[in-house]
Image 1: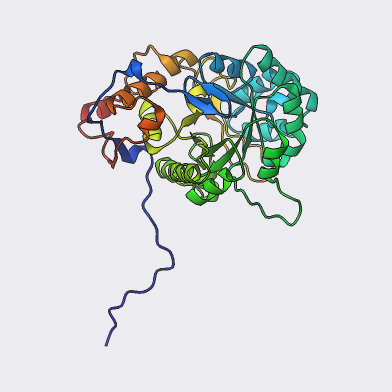
Image 2: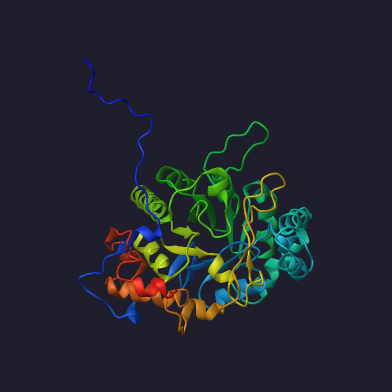
Length: 384
């Protein structure tokens, strides 16, 4: 007689969601968009808009870091990139932008072999500070102990420790990994770390005393980690899970540590959904790479690309089709949501009756895989 008992499952998978699979439900009370407050804090620093430019060579140089801060946001300069390897990084950026598709990966592997120079780190920090801007500098974990004191001495304000996947506990036989809790004690700068995508990973990171967490593994336009390594969690689910960790940490400690959804944001709707899912700010790469002020000159590439044996980023042509100010504040005549991100966020907050970012976290969301196509046959066929 055959048994009807189901075979045990080795793994139980759960459904996860990205930007195109969910929608925000308008609130019962609405609010004028100009009455919304979009302030965002990292440590003692307050920004009037919760937008951060990605720590990528094609997105942020000294000039971009200064300009986005003047507009109310924050730019993060990657000190492991070209800016601290070359006295004149613009010459190198020109070469990368001018390289053919066949030669660009090999060129970048060569370019990024140039040693990082301590004096250039100080020069870049000083240039940002001299302009009166908040200076945020990104480093990889392996270089943090060496470079953090240089950044702090030069006047750096915020330290971002960033890698593809960040955990509070790293196991290695060959070296003693970075102890984030020790690093927090050794520097006066607030420390933001990332990236992570899970409740438990985010909670452990917050317990080290950090000032912010970057959320997202592999969603960026120039990142191929999901294809090469198969890792990642869609951004809406990752944000919801990390927001739950933030709230749990607040309950246990009384300290509110912001989370920052990092990567995969293409248009205003994605940004608004991130805040409804629980983020406190967003980190943007490819949309900023499309601005005329971006150092990538119409190209965008992942910072994992130079890996000598396993390049996991790709240079993509994004073009130059807007300015930083139009991207953030408009005005715009574009109807598909790729400009005026701040206006989109304020309008969505108004429709949800949310006066602050934290109130926006309470907005109802629904699973809606047809949200971008329902009733849009003419727009789809006309390429709008």
